[in-house]
Length: 395
Ligand SMILES: *Cc1c(COP(=O)(O)O)cnc(C)c1O
View (tube, rainbow, N blue to C red):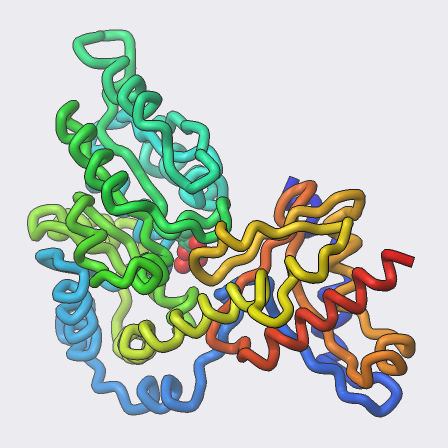
């Protein structure tokens, strides 16, 4: 569904990129890119850190900047060791392979989770692991009774796959960046342990969760056996992720990274960017969350206060850097197209030409994502553009 919708919006986005932001009747067009927090570009400080990074051959364990990142991250996450890898997709795959040593092992996870939907089914096609997807509840959690059924069904049976692992996602992307409650994490970990399984946390946006809960990330990670974290989302680095866990698990993770082709040489240039991302995380993510909240509900004016019959938003569901907008009688692809287009009427009416970029998310919703390249002023401009587009539709 999402793929079809994204394809529908693709020609317009391609044309837009080819043109640059452009101008309209002498008014330069201003672009506010809310498609994803992956679109950030490294700023001057990050580029300087990358240029000046001290490097070595990380395959020999000799890159001081990678080592610094791995040590600092281990401390921050409260794990014995971490390993720098190219992407969070690889971090998740390494984790699944590290926990599920037997082909045909079973993995329980949310049916809308990133690992299940967006990672090429790598756990099946590469790791030989069988996934049992469970329904994701609106808050991003899984039903504990359903989880217990999944964990126990194969126990003592020669007919069922053996459940080795539960994968959770925090923040939970498909629910709109919801934060998993600490008590839920504790309960899932206890259940898994009771039945001999482990818990991996897809923490691509773990830092968003920690900032939203106002706890150190280690408070979250303590309830898991392994964790992944992505540097190229809200932390703003151009590439990179990590896996964290116990020393024996990480020893195996190193071998798996090698097997998957994820070993890098002078990777310190990337680790340097990740270190800047971590250092800035608290400040940047707090601001992103504030901007997302502001967009949804104000104070002053927010999408909720526009009170359009075409769309609705639940401000209480805005916990981090994402806003889900539910549409009524308006196809998501059409809304996205109208938000990114500029017209003479817009310039005449508002004195501005603003392109707001968004992806359709489901058949009835669009998702907007805040990140370090979207300021409070951009947020205000995006909202005014929504107001203009909704006003046009209302006539
Ligand atoms: C983006 C993302 C990933 C994968 O990260 P890449 O670095 O793009 O491979 C995994 N899980 C979640 C929840 C994500 O949002």
